[in-house]
Image (tube, rainbow, N blue to C red; front, side):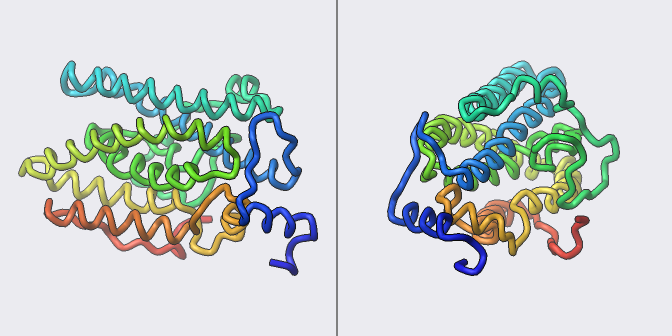
Length: 268
């Protein structure tokens, strides 16, 4: 670390390790602010584009009860985006122009396509949000897999060195848990239906590598810096491993399996 960063950065790493935090309105070190803004843009655009992907399922959901639940999830996701965009605005970023000039509803039309770690548009969303939620099974897999993956990542933010983000995440995290519970319920329903189970496994196979890529590369130097700055608590691989173990324990009793994932096989 000493060979890679200057004295100011090393001093900052040390202060944060000892408990230093930054509050609203406080002047942030430029290096810290740059990394913080990167993460906030990624979350804000992911929340917004995720909401846009869910919107059609208010109409397509199989019952009035489910339409209400999907509408609530859509509302939650847009509220999450607004919380993060407010933080960005407070840090001097222009989210209004960004939203006005970015197609946040853009989705790939192709179904079985793997873009790996690639970003396709001039936005900052985690790239799983470029994929189209084509079936009700996909919607529920998204709740079951992606919202759970997001929850694991948000856990780290609950200890963020930037206190306004930590405070904002507290409410977001609770709502994401509700989304996960919705996915858990439906995956069990679909897995126990002989007419749905094979299709569920097929779509799980499709979405699995997409979700794996959400955690980033196993050896991410940038992620290591986020940890040093107190903006994350664990490495990409640590979070991914915890997530995989949880999913395996949940799907095994349902007779489902997850395919092997290899980072080396993902497009860059």
